[in-house]
Length: 214
Image (cartoon, rainbow, N blue to C red; front, top):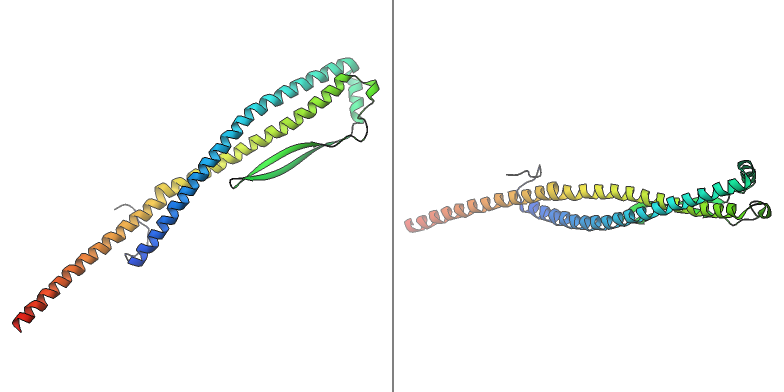
C-alpha cells in the first residue's frame, strides 16, 4: 500500500478525524488555487505596465537630456552649474506598501513641493532650461512608477512560487497521504467486520447445535 500517515490507529474515531482533515485540506487547496489564479492575473498586469512605463521613462529621460544639452549650449556648462547651486531641494520619495491578495507590494512615488521662490533668475535664463527641468521632473516620476511596478512583479513572482509549492504539497503529498490512510483504516475496519461476522456465525451455529442436543 502507498504511504500512510505514521502513527495512525485503525479506529472509527481516527477515520472520522482523517475525513475532516481531508475536507479541510481540499478546501485549503481550492482556496490556494483561486489565490494563485488571482496572483497570476496581477503579475501579468504589472508585466504589461512595465513595458509601457519603461518606454515612457526612457523617452522622457532622452527628451530631458536633449533639452539640458540645448540649455548648456545657450548658457554654458559653468553657468548651469552655478545656477544649480542655489536651487532648493523640493523632491521627496514617498515609500509606501499596499496589500494585493495578501501580498505586500512596495509603492514608490516622487512628490514635488511647490516652489517658494523662483529656482533661478528667469529673466537671465532661456526657456530651454525651464523645459529641461520640467521634463526631468516628469522622468523622475515615471522612473519611480517603473521601479514600483518592477518591485511588485518580483514580490508577486515570489508569492506565486510559494503558493504553487503549497498547492503541489497538498495535491501530491498531504491529500494523497490522508486518502491512503483513510483507505488503510477502511480496509482494516472491513476486515474486522468480516471477522466479527464469521465469528458470530460460528457462535450461532454452536448455539443451534447445543439447542438441538439439549
